Length: 212
Image (cartoon, rainbow, N blue to C red):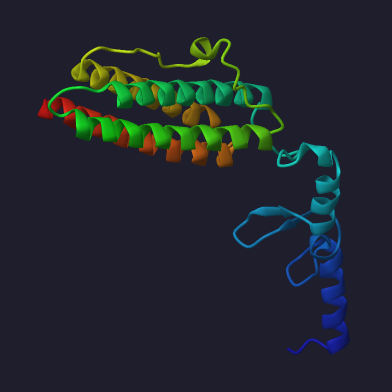
């Protein structure tokens, strides 16, 4: 039996008041959080704009930043020190390398030094983005660094010391990545990219030792 039009309209109005399908939800036109396809949630535009204006001096660090900022800054400054020590060690070995295979190994040390410097620059920039200050002070640099500055004598010793340092850096970055998880995806992605390069360095140094 057909339902009169006025009765269907009345039913739709009642459904809208009770939140049944076919009605217009408050989230579509009002404030708060809007339900997205797939069951996700996204803050409405007005809320996003209001939050962005609060504490504007914090720059990239917004209210939903999930990590402990002080802990992240400490870890990043330790990573910065580690990269700087690696730069210094690689550069010394680049200039001091002697022996039959010294020329090719020395060149590789220089490449690694330049890449470690690029890592240091990225880390320092991220520290500033998070509202911190990159610690470039030479005082306590070795103490802050996870790896050591070892001068080494022979070419083989230089390769071994750099390999040990790379392995330390790899372990450190893996732990930092695990700690950050989804709480700071930007920093995590940066560290993952740096980690990938450190793994390449370790492989190259291991190959040098094997070629002996």
